[in-house]
Length: 254
Image 1 (cartoon, rainbow, N blue to C red):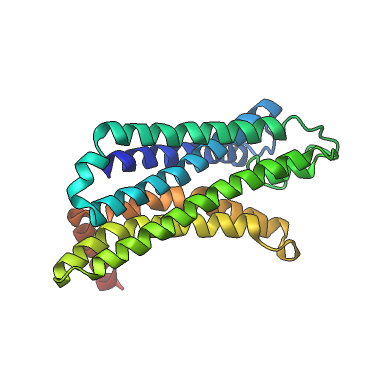
Image 2 (cartoon, rainbow, N blue to C red):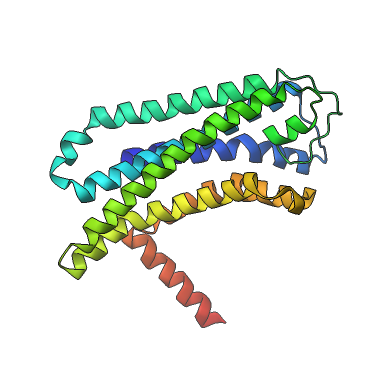
């Protein structure tokens, strides 16, 4: 689990470093520009790290399933070599996904200006600048990516159904609590990631507006990577004790 958490932390750090530094630079220097090459690199890296995070969360779901439903086979099914292979597959799949989207997006002619209504380069914003019907290829790639993501989602749901069935069969309340505590951080991170991304990309066009698009992009690109380390760290007893002391001190002052 800690090996996969390390990979998840790297994907979170990568996605934050892809968008936030440039946005901070533009804000501090009062500029709103980004070069064509930087924009392409930003889209590639952002899609790469976001895709890697989703694939890693899927693998971590399998890790929780094996640890709770097949604990005696954990060492066999999730040995160090198997974990390395699965992590490598997640990063490789994310690289191919990012390469397909970036190559296709920047192969389109852009003829509707060069102004993006966003604080970072985003594929839907680039497609709005294109006047070519070739963007249907991007739709095709998006459909394939969505299908792959849906398969991962079905796998997650199936895994957690099996996990909850196994946990509810545990006779002791302490055992059930321990099993649930290993799953809740992953469920919280997964729910935060899926809800923000899904609402950002599948919202109705009728409720779309520049300010709402900006807020939603900030929500799914910055908030989950920022909160993920905190959510997983809350399993640490020393950190929880420090948070309690901080909250108690704040309430006493007020």
